[in-house]
Length: 256
Ligand SMILES: [Zn+2]
Image (cartoon, helix red, strand yellow):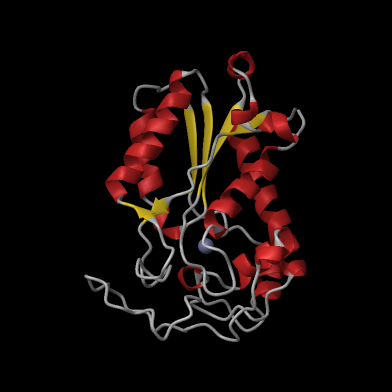
């Protein structure tokens, strides 16, 4: 398969039928359209989900389904919240229904090896719920849910990405990892990173409704100023390898 053949939407229906017959795995990327500071575009999560999924499908009997680019509601303590211009989110109920419908369609057509690859913290739980609902009528299927693929990096890469200490994934939003990945994959869209992020004081609770929290904030929740294409390349390689190792373990020999 060349890269084009690893994209489900590029296939004709007889090719899809043949992909089902050969027990091809399907990766469904799910992202978000969410503010990512002044340095990154609002499609960062959607772009990374798709890019990493397509890379993961290479050299495997796998195709990538058309991505779901909208995600669940951004939260102030992990994504900046809904008040930043450009953040466009789905209500949780809509999201569950949408993801469940797409997975249900793939299962109805006969695919039995599905992997949901989400790159947006707030999608956690909702992706699992959607997958749980979709798979009910298909007990012979295997549906793998990867909700935090960024949490798979080696100690060496973590040390390189976060020489001043790791703030935890909720604050690593538009920070070192995502900025580094985009510097490696799509440098033309990366702007200058703030020297330090907002360094939000996290609370063990949330307050609703959201107030106007954006006036003094950059939308970067921690420092991104040390990001580099070199770190991005390292992280990219490990995340793709992790995705492929999960697929190999759960779906058996799927090399193509
Ligand atoms: Zn992100």
